[in-house]
Length: 204
Image 1 (spheres, rainbow, N blue to C red):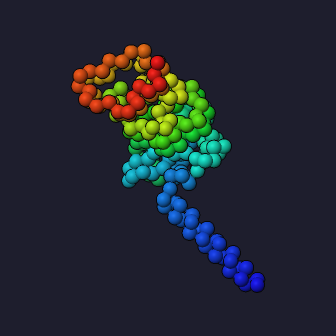
Image 2: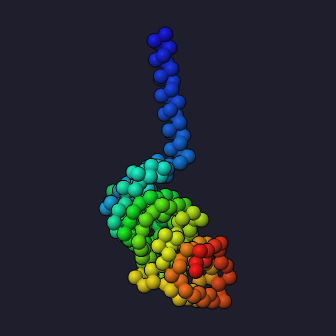
C-alpha cells in the first residue's frame, strides 16, 4: 500500500511538472519577467527588443503592485549581459494595480499591451516622442492607454489641448486619445485616410 501511495505522489508530481512546462510554453509572459535592469522588469520579445513586464503572474495584484512605485522613467534602450536591447513595448498587465506618481514613456515604444495600466493609480505621464509617433502606437482595447487614467496627454512636457494632427500622419491608431479629457478641440487634416476604433472615446 505504501508503494502504491508513493507511486501516486510521484505520478501527481509528474503531472504537475508537465502542466507547468506546458503552461510556460503557452503563456510565458504570465509567469514572470526575464530580467530586471535598473529597477524595471522586462520580457525579451526578440533578439534585440524588450518590453516592460509585470513583476509576476498579473493575477497576483498585491505582488505586482509592489513592482513599481513613485516616478518611473522607462529608457529607450537597456544593456543586459553586455548586449543592448531597444525597449519597444509595454507588455500586458505591466503596471497592473501599481500606484505611481508619474511615468515617462520613450519614443521607442511602439505598442502598449492589454490592461497595461488597469487598476493603476497614476497622476501623470509624459511621452518623449512626437505627436506623429503617438498616433502610430498600437493600443489594446483594455486600459492600455494611460490617458484613460490621467485624462491628459503630455508630449515632451507640454499638454496637448488643441489637438492638431500633423500633416505627415495618414492614419490614427485605435484608442490613441481615449479618455483624454484635456483635449478641447481637434483638427484632422485631409491626408488622414484612416481613423481607428474609439480614438476619441470618452473625450469631453
